[in-house]
Amino acid sequence: MEVLEKIKEQVESNPVIIYMKGTPAMPMCGFSSRTAEVLKKCEREFAFVNVIANPDIFEHLPSYADWPTFPQVYVGGELIGGCDITVEMFDKGELAPMVQAAVDSAKSAE
Image (cartoon, rainbow, N blue to C red; front, side, top):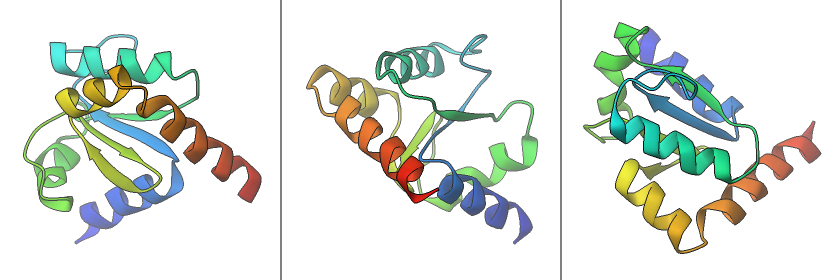
């Protein structure tokens, strides 16, 4: 399926990516807003896809990693979860090192 291939390419080519409602600058739901904020606090660049502006991705992303809700955060090509998990990992001090390692690894591979 073409859309799932596009998602796979996005996940694999971006060390950190969030599929969210809206954008980090203009989130369209509280869960997306909180998740984008903790990613910003990790002080590394991350990619995003506005699922509202991409209805095909909105429709098919839940089946990509069998995760039914938005936002979805992928680090190093792996789904780490949605808002609650991402915020909890940040609060425990686990998210920032994971994000930093993924971004640094991608930069060294260039």
